[in-house]
Length: 306
Ligand code: ATP
Image (cartoon, rainbow, N blue to C red; front, side, top):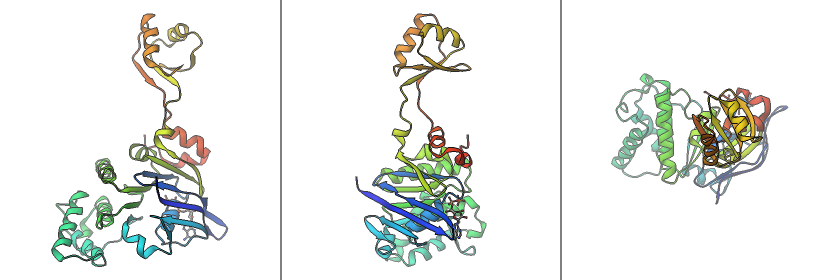
């Protein structure tokens, strides 16, 4: 699979602080890549470097196969970006703001451009309010307008810094559906977030930044793959322990962990012994557990939001 974003030994220093400390990002075509890290871990600085808004101290960046920032003029029109606090003109409507953005775009007739603007407003759920002045928009609506701007040119790659910032749960789930739909139709998505739950529900690949360093980069499916154990829920954990003779590795209340990755077999043994089973599943680590193991104590600032 081809690299859509690749960095090699990317560093950004501010005085003595290494805000980004030698990271090798590897984002592939078709990924929904979650770039996870606590506040201050260097996510925004990285995103800004990818887009040519901040110059690296050292290291290399390729976006869509071309060197950044050198190839910016050629590459950036193919990239939709939403970075912290999108700036809009408050006295203009959402439509007018997008028309201004589009004015520097690829051209086309006025009518075609207006149609495209209406389309992206609809896509982000602002169809009904596109004509209202932006100063009357909530934070969440402004965030959606920023996303609409990022979508205008039908980008191959979306780079989004904390895209669900300021959105309520309903808005978060709408943006999630929209990003998944865009991804299904071929858009690669790179998004930064400090919300584990958001990344877990959305992303196919994860990078974890901890104090400027990439401590983990892996496919989500691999990170949360079954551990080889089975989780049994039962009101009588002691009876499970004696029935399964040596296979129980831990008991936590009514939750019993059993060695072996065949829940049906465990179920047969327990039901055969007349033990009541209220739940049965393969054990999988949560993203939270994986991230904590990789990043140690400092990611307790990464919010699990659960
Ligand atoms: P947040 O989620 O809060 O936006 P972040 O992970 O995006 O955090 P960055 O904004 O990239 O983190 O900041 C990383 C570190 O670099 C922080 O310690 C920050 O104070 C520092 N930093 C960022 N920009 C500058 C700057 N222009 N000058 C000096 N220090 C900076």
